[in-house]
Length: 367
Ligand SMILES: Cc1ncc(COP(=O)(O)O)c(C=O)c1O
Image (tube, rainbow, N blue to C red):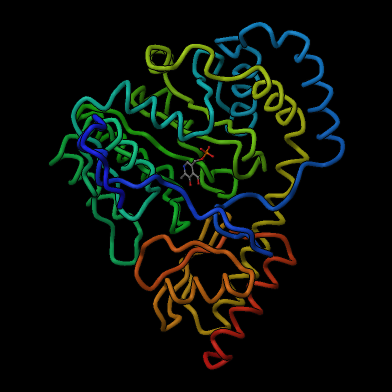
């Protein structure tokens, strides 16, 4: 923890905090941030280059503040995936879904926010940074979400914002659309907004919560191009919601927040959506193969609908195993859950390296 000098007028609630982020260290196999291992194809790189060259001629001007073309294309993408009828008025886009989360807190975090732990830690972190009291909701011991208990917790706390991440990070487990609807009904009787973080939706066969928005205007759905779309470096996240929620996003966004270059690159990626999403099936089958290998090593794997696996049963401290893996060139994630580690599904070579190094560390004793 940093100690801050007295002359620095840091807001007191920030003083005990540390900057969020997974260690960015070089490794042969980088399996720690749930990125997609497949780099853009030459055809996509060419398309991005052409578009960037084209828009670069007007970089003396501010970007389209409303990102009209990109938001229209994002609406089309969601409609094609979920059979919905959204248009630009239902979509907001920002620099990664983290910025979307921040804007949601800035606009609506007027009392408290509730999320079910363990889940994506940026929800509670952004709550802290934006001075919204955070409530750590409870899951079952196996980390699955008990929907009746979730509804009871919503009813007793009546938070301004309730966060559900499905598939959940770091567990990978998903809830069904019927379960989400039950929670949406509870939220509508208690007041407040239900925020569904669907960063990993494309890896799951569950129906998206975007299909509930027409019936439940207080349901907000966050998506990202960082995972299935293999576009983490561009930083593009988006929100699908009722038009008045989108209008509120405009109140808190910084003017010209989404650069011309970001808009052009994201638009090019959307044109290549079939190619990019083509990697999803490969990642899912590699995930199943890796779960099998981990279980073969005697480990316990949480069933996952995402591009990562949470596993336990290795019999040493999580931090120790994490370090031993890193010493051998494999970087995975210690998510701060004692006895568990999370591994992202990587390329075939990375996955093979991870399994072989893990087997070597565990000494084959668990086979
Ligand atoms: C559940 C969840 N939401 C949001 C994000 C942030 O994604 P982005 O890269 O769009 O900011 C992540 C990243 O790991 C995530 O796991």
